[in-house]
Image (cartoon, helix red, strand yellow):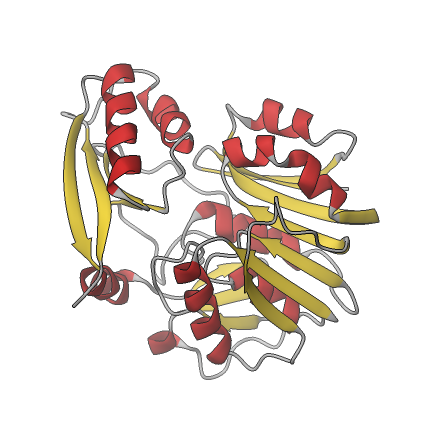
Length: 301
């Protein structure tokens, strides 16, 4: 029997949503740790897929009604999120739905195409290029509920920041690895040791599936654990594509994981949350910053 995912469909009554809803809604959702957010609003895309966050500059999309499907770990988290959203934004329409696993996979296979981020190309198994450019590293990712197929802005920006870092001979940690795309990217870039950690077994299963689709050296492992409770030795590069709330509350643990002179790549927060997130990671200093559709990624040293 196919697994059912607990989801909440969130819709605005018109294109012109009330001022601030597009900023407040992610903040409210952040407190309930959604597994994934699916944007159901149709927007035109350039030939070949989504926009590369590095170049050229992303044009402003035409206005479309807000229409999201948000996935949660259980019904309790979904009900709590619905109550908070209704209290803060009563003008939104909320509909609890159950989404079969096979439905999610079918939609993914129908819509996902290869995308680029920095020197990486993220491709589903059915669209792997036969002759990629010599300076392009292809990563094959099987679409699933594990966050990080490469089509979300935060994943693409983390990949773009990671592509600017020397990984040869480095130890890399990917906290909240999701589909494992960042860990796989580091392994394919010459890292000597890579550990992808996630508390969700479905994410680990997704990462292992994608790992088998790539010609990985035997330096990467995926572990189900809570990095807040499991000690790990510091690394040269640490990636954490989480949520703004989790980044703020786990900043001390993530800072400890970065070796002196090392680099931390973080994302999963928007520009409204950026000042508080950056402050939580002091004395680490931003060395690079990317922004796409209000989402932000930082490279801290």
